[in-house]
Amino acid sequence: MCPVNLNPVPLKMKWLLKYFRNPIGHGLSLALILMLSSCGETDQTEAEINKVAIDLQISRFDQEFANADAADIPGLKATYPYLFPEQFPDSVWVAKLTDTIQVELSEEVEKAFGNFKAEAADLESLFKHIKYYFPDTKIPHVVTLTSDVRYENRIILTDSLLLIGLDNYLGEDHHFYEGMQRYIAASLNKEFLISDVASAFAKKVLSYPRNRTLLSRMVYYGKELYLKDKLIPSATDAQKIGYSQEQMDWAKANEEQMWTYFVERELLYSTDTGLDRKFLDPAPFTKFGLELDNESPPRLGRYMGWQIVRAFMEKNETDLQQLLEMSADEILKQSNYKPKR
Image (cartoon, rainbow, N blue to C red; front, side, top):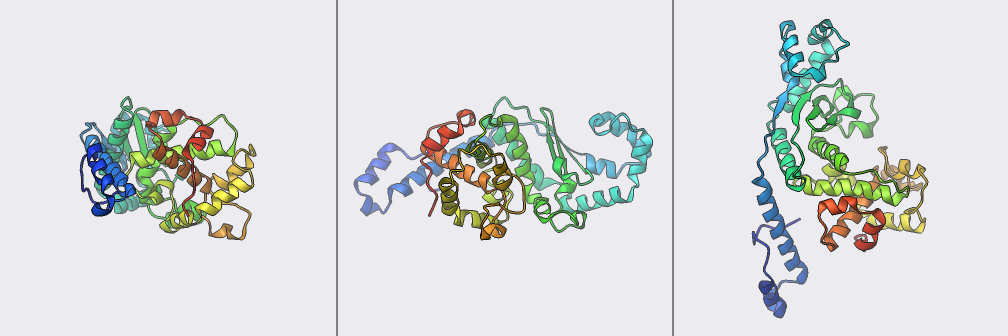
């Protein structure tokens, strides 16, 4: 984390040399100088991103449908044809207007999101960052809706549309999510909404690895999470990976032990696809086969891949586009990754 902005522009080499000559008198270590320089560059980049002009259109279909009557259905179909499959007659949609579950869904979404102002600001920031790093990206039309809690498709991103099922972000203890496995319900929180959109974009610019090793897939997810470092820098690490803060703290505290586990068991270059279920896929916890499993967060292989990519980017002058094309093996070798003790 950067300190208070003491210097809004990158530090000059002459300034650095001045302090190196008398480091004790000035009380600045090399590490602090480099941190200040990095933060100055970050501040400058964010200032440039804030100037990026985008035209972000957000339509609240969920509100429009909730406030509609039968006479409004033809107009809604004309405006949002992709939300009204042709095989269903208008009578289906008219009936849905007064369906008890649909009405309650709309009411609960309204309670949770209201005017959507905060989320709209976050989406605008996200797409400014996307446009800055990926200039050829077209800004999609954002449409919010209710989806009967189809959480597996809570975010749908195409070249021209971003559909957000707001009923999938009402909080893990909401009664709509009763009966779900707890690790699934825990992800249905509005604090993860922007992170989920960033993930949807990352999947459009990342190619799933053809290499069959566990390391290749760890680094694939590590790249996705590193993209979030750049695209949603104000989000917490926990929000980026979909953890609670307690889970995030556990991962950081046990990073060295986890890395030792992967190395000593020679798992990094294993092509056993069963390892995905243990270390990468959504689950209640990560399956090390140890007594501590029930205490561990899920998907810790992704967390480890993230730290490898971060270590690589800290040590190498590589832009995002180059990073996305690099092999996992090359990234690991050049990262000189060593877990924090």
